[in-house]
Length: 147
Image (cartoon, rainbow, N blue to C red; front, top):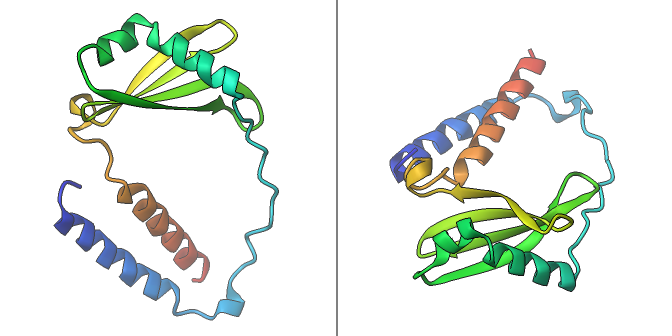
């Protein structure tokens, strides 16, 4: 989706599907959701954040991205569901965005990924698309279950 007209059209379609899905009685809906405890996401210490920035800013690939440009960065935790794997440094350099994965144990950058920009469809994914697709799939699932 590249323009607002396509987004509006998709939202209109989804509204029609949601209305059709809502036409059946609420008490007839299956109880498919149950409360689950979210896993505790580990945090980075201030020392780990400082180390991650230092490691990232000394990497040749990162230096190539930021040299001669205005940039800013944020640091967060790189993790699976329960374990800290390292750090993630997000870099914004003059309209381009990158995510740098830093292995704190080995003290090295293991991956640099561009988000959006010329190498990823000329602007990345429309932020409404994942939510719209989720609503569409859930609506189709619910409609199928009520027939």
